[in-house]
Length: 283
Image (cartoon, rainbow, N blue to C red; front, top):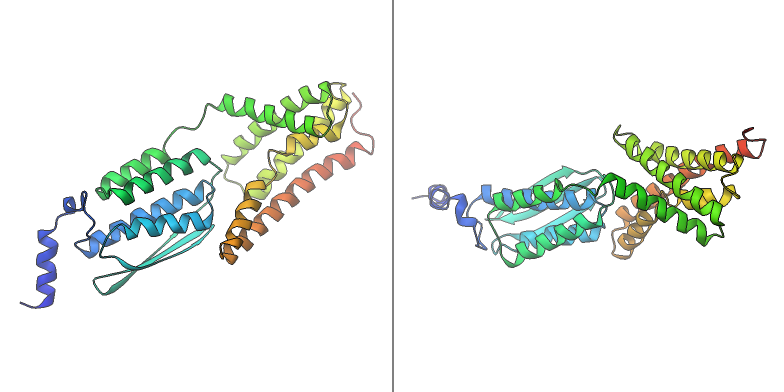
C-alpha cells in the first residue's frame, strides 16, 4: 500500500470528533480548521483594539496546543493576519483581512480567557468557534449607560483643566451628545478621520453655543473635556508597545493612524474656534 493510500485511510479513521480533548491533528483538513480558529481569534482581538504582539502570541499558542503542528509563524498588521505552519511535512498558509471596529477591553479579556482554557484543554473546533461567536455577538453595554459615562468622563476631564461648576455641567451634556453623534455616524461606516472630525467639530460647536447662551464660562475648558473622548491615547500606547516588542511596521501604522486622528480633531476644533473668535453666534 502506498503512502497516499495510508494517508487516506488515516483520515477516514480519524473523524472530526477525534479532536475533542486531544492534542493531535489527524488530517490536513483538521489542521486547516485549527488555523481558521487561530485566525478568527486574531481577527477578533485586532477588531477590539488588542496589541499586535498579544494577537500574534495568542494565535501561536492556540496552534502550539497541538503536538504535530510545527514551525508556526504569525505575521500580524492592523488590517491583516498571515499564519503559516507545517503539518505532515507540508507548509500550509492562510491570510485574512481584519478591520478595527472599536476598543472593547471586556471582549479582549474574554478572548484571552478562552485562549488560556483552549491551550490547557483543547476542545472540538466547532465548539470553540461557537464560543468565540458568543463573545463576538455579546451585547454591548446599554447605550444610555455609555452616553452617561461619556458625559461624566468629559466633565471630570474639564475639571482637571480648571473648569468651574457651569463648565462642568455644560461639558457633561456636550460630551454625551458628541459621543452619541459619533456612535450614530459610525454606523454609516465612514472613515475614522471623518468620524473624529465630526466628533471634534460637534463638541466645539456645542461648547460655543453653551458659552454664548451663558450656560458655560470658558469655551476652552468645555472643548478640552469633551474632545478627550476622541483623543487616540490607546492607539498611541499600542503603537509604542508594538515598537518595543519589535513589531516596527505595526507600530508605524499605529502612529500614522494616531497622527491622522489628532489632525481630524485639530481641524474640527480649529474651524469652530476660528469662527468663535471672529464674533461667534449672537444669542
